[in-house]
Length: 421
Length: 170
Image (cartoon, rainbow over all chains, first blue to last red; front, side, top):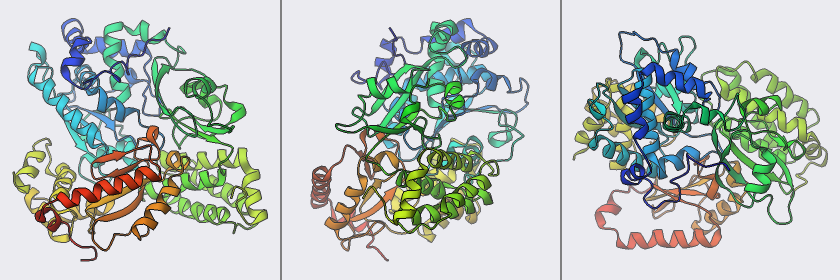
């Protein structure tokens, strides 16, 4: 029987308070880490656990940490990416609102591992309640000696601060987030240098997602073997899945990594709305290519979804039923990327502008023969040519809609109307 | 605390004053309702940073309003998860009830209506943010009740609260 750990305080009254967190064994992982382990031990444990980044890219967390130079001659920084903006994703908000100490403890241990004394949590500006709860948690933890000078009587000093974002999806891209933290417009940086060597204020910096950091205390207490024993060996651990869209029970689910998408949607989330059939599912936020209903028997982990031509991304699972027009879905998705394009590179900025114009006319019943081919050509011009993954994500999403539902685009153009209206 | 004191306190979290521009703009917007040129210059002066640095952030990030907005900024999500839960019907309803279009402000300066990108609360789609608060699982009846409640709070608001909201277009 799978035991949820990340969501264990979700339905507990006052789950966000230090007293609740401590009563459930909170901050024992930090105490254990400082008492029994060197920073390198912690990096070793996380490597051994095979924890991979929960923000979307799935990069091995322990390896990322090991890239930080031991002797930098500069302060090192830990940044938490809590700018959760991928449409269909709400897991990090719920962790911060209902169990923020899990993140604070995870950050303290992670900072100890990489040798950082300062951390910033970049929280999206709309998340006002999450910010309040996290502020309160940081204050409580500081008062109890879990943060500050000489954490729990050790030689480790650690302070963390919240940086409130102001509504830019691009800040989910880690180097754009660093520019934003430095007080600039959020635009991605050319890599290398990678943040581990030259990140925030040109100092060694590790950027991890909220859920990734929340896994760390559990790995320290329960051991890497426990973590690795859940789900596929190459992509293990407990995982948060955000279910939304046309499904009976939308919500946040904690289940093993690698669970079948069909089981997740049909059993856990109750399946389609009454009288409806599932048409397609977006498995990992709108950057992840949609999967038509016949492909739902796929494992929800980084490798299985990549093999199926999609990606786990942020595990924002959006269910689309047979009442929905896929041209409309594709248009809304591309309008989003167009709106959020930071403007730095031409393929993304101009390409998406062009794609939106074509999609809008097709949706409005004013498409012309050749529009499908034009969309494909535009995707080709954007994919692999944009400066960061934003343009790629948009092109991949549209390509999947065209590949699986081309007949709907063709019908709009032929009939000069939306067949769903 | 004065606005200057709040901004200086926020700036203490960073080794570089430039990093404090974003928090400073959020503080200034809370204080002034929106961010006209003179407020941006004040922020630049308090932090001792280039004015262009402040302007470029105020115009890049969508949470900063350089134009006035109504006392209640109705921010209705119309991204995919909300769209699949019929957020469009809600948009049309609110437009009809308030007599404004998406992006507009009511003549009494009470409501500005905007569609926004994903608010990260898709489990309660369709969702709308008003001020600091999220309102989820919305339908037409709930939206109507919410608008009623918001209007009722105005009845209790003081003259000073209302004066802080500039009429649109000024």
